[in-house]
Length: 311
Image 1 (cartoon, rainbow, N blue to C red):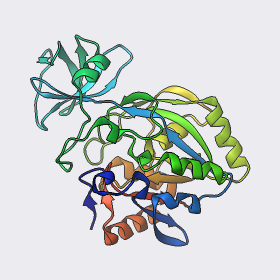
Image 2 (cartoon, rainbow, N blue to C red):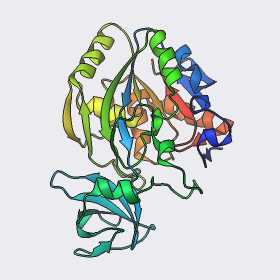
Image 3 (cartoon, rainbow, N blue to C red):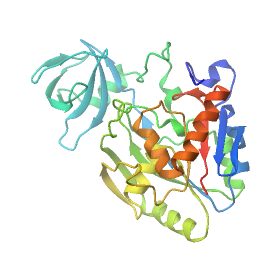
Image 4 (tube, rainbow, N blue to C red):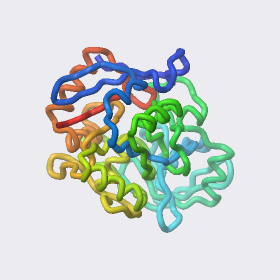
């Protein structure tokens, strides 16, 4: 049985890097803790991390508004909460300062493109809080939603696969000869309804990271993506680049760059699962989920971790 994590592990005395980690490979499934990660990697492996920081993207006004991502024309993709809140084209929604105007549906029935009368980063800095869902009953500070790699604020929700990393663990990996390189992908609100593909996301793969990926693969090392965000970015721009990606990884588009993945546990039916299968294959992913359910691993952003190492 999989159980939702209702609070950060630190709240019940477990350090970030002390969460459980299931390791799945063709040789079978092993149970460990995240601070054991170096034992399962080899000198010359490359771990790629996401440096996007989490925004305090929820603002309470006339409705609760989740700010998902900013678009090139200056407008924003937003979600009105609680779930089921309806809007209409031209509607003005009051904010603690200023207002937003709904321009057109972005995802009909859920997300809108909106123009905002005030500077959104300043609004979020003053009045925002991290987005949370009902399985987390208490509000936690923004610091609990940041990874140690966060450098540029831009994700509506935490790139949570990187949350269990600690400075001490990063040091142990580097000392063991494991390389670490950055990308940035700003993620929007959680995966939309079951069976729907992920939305386009803004990303940047530095040229140096792309060269390290190429060199690692040429030398026989493994490219380990920390999360689905990193996987999507690397597969979108294997030679480096930036912009928007609408790449959908799955059975018809397997991964060709990433050959290992660190991930959290996603609900069945989420588009993330197809991406995991694109890297590790359905058989290995199914085996991991079955073992995690038997052992009661914790789901969602404050939950346990999984390391997928296909052949």
